[in-house]
Picture 1 (cartoon, rainbow, N blue to C red):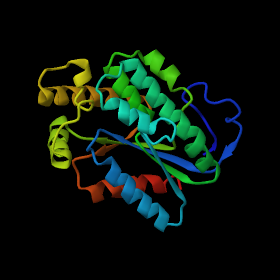
Picture 2 (picture 1 turned 180 degrees about the vertical axis):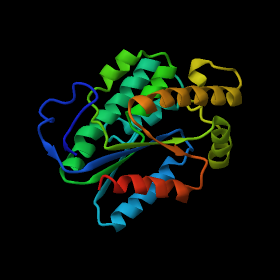
Picture 3 (picture 1 turned 90 degrees about the vertical axis):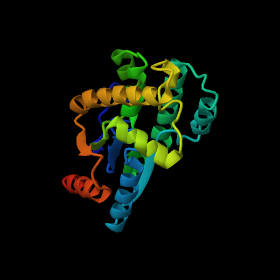
Length: 227
């Protein structure tokens, strides 16, 4: 990675430090197969002799648990939720991601700022505000995006959890009184935002409907090009 580049102003006193690690992101909706791919990828990289560190949403020691608890009440405001997740990411960046990159680790991030920006965009946050809010985020070496049809996500959600999540269904923004319909509308809106970002941020697109092993083969093939 060398000198870090950022999506915005970055972080003071960090830009000139050498970072020998790699930052690899796997994006996609809940139940798109991200976690499976991260697990398979970590196993492969470690077998190849690489030191690997994980990152993701709500994994900050500072506010990760607080976000989970606050979401249970289904009463968080849109901006409050945005700022909590931004704090969660910032804490992980300072205390986990940057130290690991500096030490030469490969950091695998199970989602990144793109999911947060897509969620906020669907909730009518302006693109300018979001880019400024997350301008401290480093540019990853690669971003993989698992694309899955909302109807398939609906089926997988029931198969995995036996129910639909209030927030993943967009119930807080009153898309529909019916949770099934709201889920599909919300996931379609999220997918639209991520498709837009895919072009702007050079995502590597993956078909999330394919066999997980086939998807993993493609990821590994791409990663070998930067090793």
